[in-house]
Amino acid sequence: MLLVTSRDVLGLALVLGSLFSITSAKGEENVLENYEKLEFKTPDGQVLRYRWYFPSELHTGEKVPLLIFLHGAGERGEDNEKTLVHGARDFVSEKLQSLQKCAVLIPQCPEGQQWVNVPWSDDAHTIPKEPSDALKLVKRLMDDLCESKPIDKQRIYLTGLSMGGFGAWDLVSRSPNHFAAVVAICGGGDSDEKVVQKIKHVPIWVFHGDADQAVKVQRSRDMVSALKAVGGQPKYTEYPDTGHNSWTESYANPELYRWLVSQKLKEQ
Image 1 (cartoon, rainbow, N blue to C red):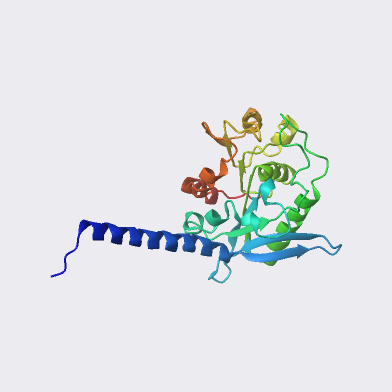
Image 2: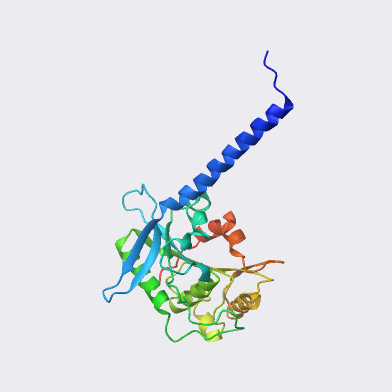
């Protein structure tokens, strides 16, 4: 007769638990393999490295939304790898893709450059006269993909964190009729009335931690207040006792994606 002790049961449980954890971790890593590693080259020799995900098995004539993600300062470079650290898993996970098949674009800002050429620690800034070189390339790439791929131009979504949060505010302010929705995380924009007046119609969800020491929470508060003052209806989530990392919880929230895919650009 085979005797099974409680120690044996516990040991088996630990082994199975470890195998499950390893399999789950491996599965999460494999999700990132869905992104292509590409480069966008302009005729004048400029290069923007980016990651690209496009859903498979589309029906004839089917078009999909496009989600553009602008990363933070720590993911700058030329490796086309670090940009997958934050958010990338969430964007190709069931949280979004089961709701709506969606293409994902993750450009990489070159080392030493910024999505917006302004200090991140300041209390406020005026939108620069011209977009940064990196953001110009993002816009050119976005336009190129929208023409060459079956993208639903009425459903282009824009999000960014930290340095990318600044980029999201800047890009929507310059192209207020291109984005169906914007998710700006721990960033800041130009809260001048003339600037926010142009984007008051855009569905925007803002996130920030109230203990952020890198980008003042007041930057997001000011943008939300300015939008409301001109008739905008932004959503705002402020995390209590949270520092700079307000993006992990935000991008893990299924409600964010339900809200996002419900937005569609109105016909101009």
